[in-house]
Structure formats: C-alpha cells, structure tokens
Length: 145
Image 1: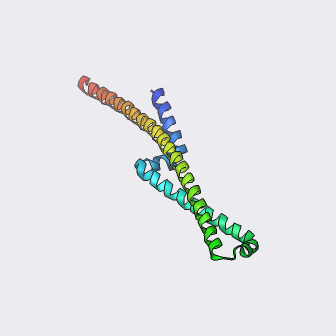
Image 2 (image 1 turned 135 degrees about the vertical axis):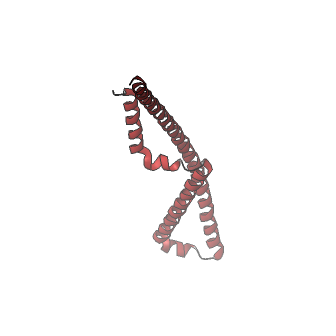
Image 3 (image 1 turned 30 degrees about the horizontal axis):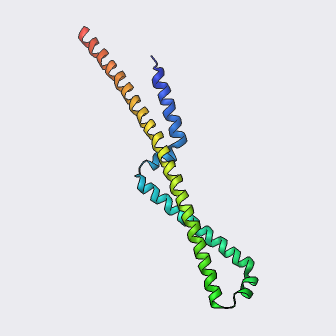
C-alpha cells in the first residue's frame, strides 16, 4: 500500500536536493562567522581588483593630461591620497553592503535547511512506523502459526 504523505515528502526532499544541494547544503557546514568571513574576504578581493582595474584604465585614458597637470611631487601625493581615500570609502561601503547581504542570505539558507531537516526527520519517523508495523505483522504471523 502506498503512503501518499511519504511520497509527497520524498518528492519535496528530492526537489530541494536537486535545486539547492550544491549551495545551501555545503554552506551548512559553516558557522555564521566563518561563512561571513569567507564571503567578506571574497568581496574585499573583488572590490580591490575592480578598483585597481578602474584606476589603471583611468590612468591609461588620461595619461597625457595627467602628466602635464602633475608637475610637482605635492600634486602627485595629493592625487595618490585622493585615490586612497576614495578606495577606502568605496571599500567600506561595499563591505557594509556585503555583510548585510550575506548575513541575510545565511539566515534564509538556515531557515530552508531547518525545514529540510524537519522534513527528513518526519520521513524517518514515517519509515520507522512502517518498519515497526511490518515487524509486528511478521511476529503475529509467527505466533499464529
């Protein structure tokens, strides 16, 4: 006899595993602080690379004008300080955004994993009840025979 509740639960679990197994189940191995540190480190590397690329392209585009405008070391130092200050502001804003984004994402993933684990426990209880019923049926047959 088929158990519709068990079939529905198994289908739901299989769809979840197929859709989210690569991301969410792997991220469940991390504590929140470790997960955020890993994601923040990746974000910091991306923002640094992106900023350096933009500055390099800007210098390549404006190199002739920059060479003629920067005649003293004080103007060069001022330009470098401005670039560093802009980098710090952009990086700080991006890191705050990354922290909020990944913290929210982690919380949502944990909620879905909690539901997934609850469904696994429910499926386990259903199977245990089925096995117990089968064992009881076999024992009754032995006692009647």
